[in-house]
Image (cartoon, rainbow, N blue to C red; front, side, top):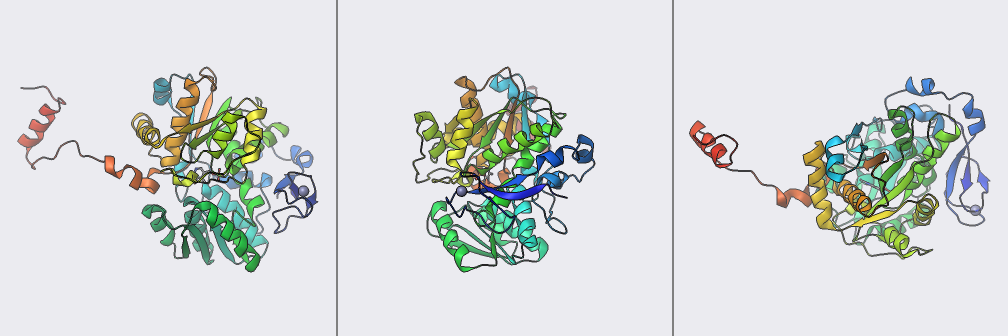
Length: 415
Ligand SMILES: *Cc1c(COP(=O)(O)O)cnc(C)c1O
Ligand SMILES: [Zn+2]
């Protein structure tokens, strides 16, 4: 049972039934799902949640109604790991990594797609679609295959080969668009008007899609023992994930399920596509769109839909937004792998590099707890690191050759 009661305009507060609608009739503002938290308060307990499935659907009462059953490939309930070795390198007391590389298609997008397609099925749609920087397309194609739906995913045509392969393998239609993500998104808005039965996860289903990101906040709090962390670092593309993580913590606090207050949220962007970091550091009220040029393709949105709300969130609570170049991204993919055994995609490198930057400039408090979101798996962006791949030595298949090499590398004592 879901406590969702309406769609509500973020700008003027107008409410609408929970139908296929994504912008306000009166002011064109974005809609988001509202809940009857008063009623939920007496029903939802720590115990009722702990007894739920080991997926995002353990929080089903705080997500939009999925209809008869959710479209559930197993997104969520990913590990939250204490990162002592990385914490030592970065000089912080308490660091945790939310390892969302472990989702069914290797990125946090499985959370939002599971919610979006569940709502889409309940609302009578028959085709899954999306505008994507890569990971969303993969997740939509996989979830569509899982329920036997056709999918139409639109991506920039110059996307990494590995991401195209991971999407097309599921058998849907993949349209490469000659242009940036922002061109792809504009095109999808036009397609929505033409195809009434197509559920574009992040366009006409966006209010439902976005709710999936709240589960990151829910899981972090539950996994810390029903305690909110002090600071959370989130990679930012459209900004939906960051704003809904904030909403998730707020709902848990309002429901009295957790100890501690709302964490301070911090954004992470690549300098080659940093419209939000730039607006934040300049104190600008509006976001100036950018033309993306970075290896962090999954974050390459130059005109972020939720940008203004990210700025509001960062400014309201003393947050910050890091901006890191591609060399730092690659370096920090390596740093994370060597210290913690996690292979992250470029977005993960952005998160760790931005975390380090904000620690160094003092906006992130070294003494307070930190959670960093690792949102996608390194196998997705193998192209980015494949040139750095080296074997330590190549040897003949003999014991003598192996021992010689190990002596040369000083891994065994010289005889
Ligand atoms: C999409 C994506 C993000 C950012 O999501 P937004 O909600 O658009 O800000 C972060 N990391 C990865 C790996 C992604 O695919
Ligand atoms: Zn409105």
